[in-house]
Length: 389
Image (tube, rainbow, N blue to C red):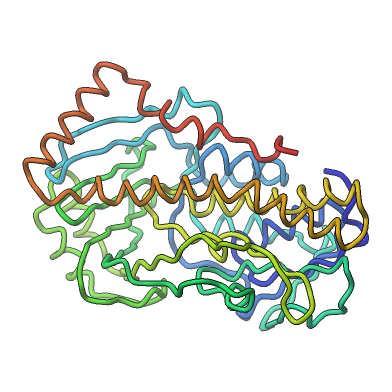
């Protein structure tokens, strides 16, 4: 990456995936970068995530690909099953250009936070910052990577508050058999679905979603009784009963949505600020793209700024870069979110007759054209944000 940002001060609010990746990418462009994290340490809760080729291209460009591959499993496929465990469709990932990883979120955070000082990134823990609290220059920027309930999004004139979708999710990690295939399995039932995949080190990640009217907090750290999870999926078959019987510790959270921000950047307290990741476009976990879209943002923002500042080194160049960032990202993330929302509807079909027809169509299509399911996502997995500028 170029060094057009070498005289720019970038303050990143949030030490999660979006914040740390943005900090690294901006530092690689020559910016003076500070990260402000309100927690006393950089750490992540125990949960898995899936990284697809569009996200891994950013990981590789950041120089972290080897380290993350060492701690993760390479995904070979995605299998959709009905709630009895019968296969409906298998999407073979081996023919897709790029790497799919099944990773532990803590390992991703560890890779992103490694050797920040060597990149010249100043990490501030137990710290909060408001846009404009640093010196106000036309080449200073605050990056809001503080999640779906971003305070800076509200300060930018953010739109509707998050609303409860009528869905709750459980997450748990159990022991895995060493000979299990490296693929994600999705079990679909009326108003419910369960996703599971193995992680490196003999672990298995489980995320189960149920539609319900009862509200649940959107905090990832709320514990729940494992019996509640087992009861919700008691009529599921295949390996699900065995998996759930092993769950000793489980957390529950409510799924909340809010629209993609209309305006991703602006002025707060007289200083420039911009949204990235969930602060700009929170998504539901039905396409496994939350971390991947955040990684794309992280690379795109400093690249867009660098391109604009190569033409105009003034504050106007910064504003043009922020507009370029928004223009490059907004339509793509909206498409991904729409597909994720559609997956939720398709996984949870309540009418048994409609469910049978839908599953039969998927099953027949996979027999006639086995590679069609993967090709359907070429627009998503084939995208390379590192080559966009």
